[in-house]
Image 1 (cartoon, helix red, strand yellow):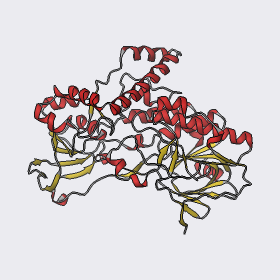
Image 2 (cartoon, rainbow, N blue to C red):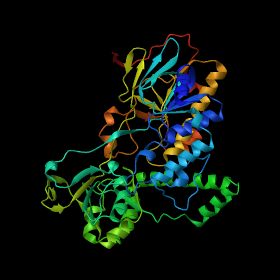
Image 3 (tube, rainbow, N blue to C red):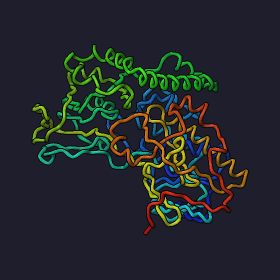
Image 4 (cartoon, helix red, strand yellow):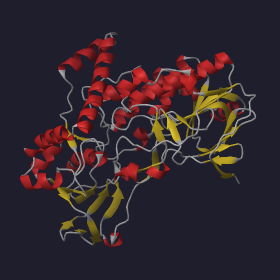
Length: 487
């Protein structure tokens, strides 16, 4: 069937479920819906599979979660490296889609503009650039990062003779050879990019406003992991699954210990870096003012080597202004450069399209977000959200299984709508990096779990009917917290 015919066929029917987005989250949801024979279609605005992993191609882009934890339980990623490049993850996701025959359910090039819930018919009408689609349930898997990165304004930027470009806009064609580069930032992206940039540029200065915690790994799997992977390839899957479980449990335990006993975490990172840099650099640039795991810990590969080589240095200070040949810091130091790369992070945007109840827009600011799955007062709507301090995929799978159980229950019981009450919930993010704190007043407030996936899986993700409001479709409902009439 031709693409236009496929599009028309999908628009002309009422689907059980529509999924928006074909990244890590959308693929996981599709797998569990298919496993339970729940009809669905996936709308993807781009022409590619993989979400952010298909759009980011800057030097050093990779996941800083070990791939045995980040890959799906139903199709583990077998690799000799724990941390794999972004393109490898994109190819892996393409393989998952191909292996589980998901392509027939995907419509590419379809960008959602708004979604309207018809309270009389208990249906979602999804308005897109290519027309309208209808479904009983809407699962928003469009991620949480805005298409536009965060780039703070700098005084005198127009005076700089070189290029000022955000890291997310770099690709293989960007010319950095033999240039003196300033890389502005200290988070995971900056730490991943720095060693890769050093392989081509003349020199690199990592300029950070304040130090961050960094863990340097050797990126080689251990003997036990290698054995379990070999067993998996021969058809014995349980050892790999057990290794993955214990790796995730270890990550949660480290998180808890470092948060509850920060002196242990500080001692660990002090020992980790003290022998790799000189005393002055260590005191100025490797001793954060906050406690371990209050922000995500960046994971580096090869950072110690480039620091020892002298091709890279770390400077801590705030930018006062740009000049023609570099950057002036507030303390009077001047850093010469021919190019400035901003690794200043991203803007968060969970809702990339408006949600409406009949003709009125739903106010999603600080909305209660039950289990990182359902928004208060919005019927038949799910938005799976992973854990920010550990494997995103692990909780996404938990959420996907629970969503599936809810829909199966509703089909068996002939129910039309499901929701959770809208209520005020304290906003208590588990980690507090700048990209969260900048827009905290706009973000949903997650509750209903410990935010520790290895524990949550046992105690908080069983299906219990009493936790939800179900309706057969004949009752009259009042859904509060509506913003305004839609034009």
